[in-house]
Length: 274
Image 1: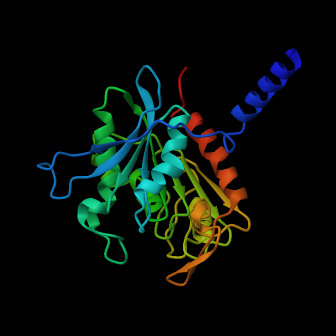
Image 2 (image 1 turned 180 degrees about the vertical axis):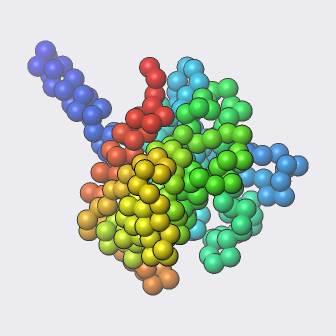
Image 3 (image 1 turned 30 degrees about the vertical axis):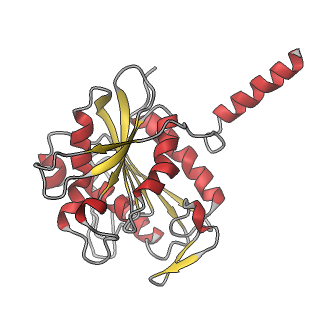
């Protein structure tokens, strides 16, 4: 019996050290109105998950891509992030606007959704407003980068993000002068969001001739996964799909590595204080 107890303890410790293998928390999300209907013609809503901490907790705003699917994003990442002890708020940017995708005509104010969600969290007594990160995927990843790049939007907001993570974003056009620690995760074979453009941004140059000095802004970290395509973390893409001429495919290895990278980055930047 003693040996069995030791083995069980070793397995539990191993799982705790391997977040890719840990089952996510099963507490259901709460649908929240991020804004009063009187505050905006398109008041946002989202799924909110509490991290289970007693005091004010760090939090993460999650932004979906152009295809929407905010409920799936909550299931895929919001649940997992909450199981790590963070408050997770997954924003629905399309539903309140009556859209099914953002396509080529994404509303200009969609880029403000990250800050609209941040302002909501800043009013929540269970959230520490000094420890909120923004996490986006594809188009949402681009919005995440826009939210923390030095500029009018970041400077005029009364509340600030303290870290940013972007999964396979379009990096072209950014000067890369970030105001907070920023992590970019992308597949080497991504033919929709190009890893080359993200490398150029991180190194301070891009194809449009925009450049910056290496010592300008907060350093960014870029992780490129060999053999991975766009949407590498979407498990229902085990059978590859082509969308608008671009290859989408799930990659288990890249997903597992990105889970570890995300958790380490969150803990290091907005970290849980025991």
